[in-house]
Amino acid sequence: MSASPSAVPPPPLEDGFGLYLVITDPVAGYVRCAEAAVEAGVRIVQLRMKRAAPEDVLRTARDLRAVTRGTRTLFVVNDDPAVAAAAGADGVHVGQGDMPVPEVRRRFPSLRLVGLSTHNPAQLAAAAAVRPDYVGVGPVHATPTKEIPDPTLGLATMAAMVAAAPCPAVCIGGLDGTNLAAAIAAGARNWAVVRAVCRAPDPLEAIRRLQAAARTPSPPPGKAGVT
Image 1 (spheres, one colour):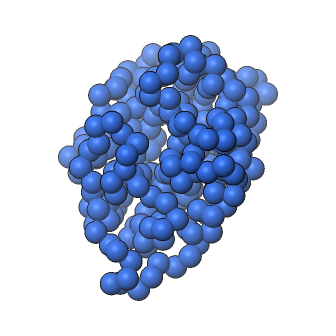
Image 2 (cartoon, rainbow, N blue to C red; image 1 turned 90 degrees about the vertical axis):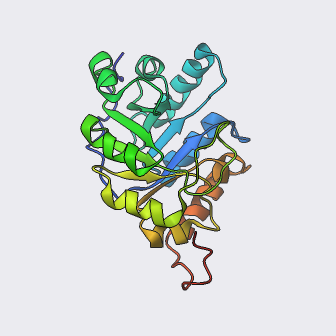
């Protein structure tokens, strides 16, 4: 299923768009988080409901599509291109064990944005052959949002992967207002958060704080806790 004719087709994804919001188990609710993201001008919102039934994911995805339709905020669904297409989403984000990027494009041509997670330089190098629209790079720091977490990269490896990425790279994993400026100083141009917004009772305020943190210069070397 393609998006509604009233939707504004998203332009090609530019680099340096900044915040990418992953919405999972938000205390303020899925719709309120999406509304906050649109109001704050967040470029991409991803719906991630790992343990939910497909019909529940689809229902929520349609709600978020209604919020983001016609705005500059792109909407993607985690893992499941069939649900993403049925909801009229702009795209899907797949992991290393999910449907391969070329197959997603062949089977679901309505999905104009396909992102791919990468967790090490070898996976990033392999991504060039399948040409995703963007790659996830992480986890930068330790995070409890994954049941089986991948090894953390640290800022140095993150920076090297961002520099080598064949497309826009979204850094993810343990990023929040306390360490975001250091990640940006190390080379992050786009960065995803989960808990920093989803745990906040006021998601718009949380997003605004992150956007302000992204504009704040990083502390001098030796005081930023770089790993």
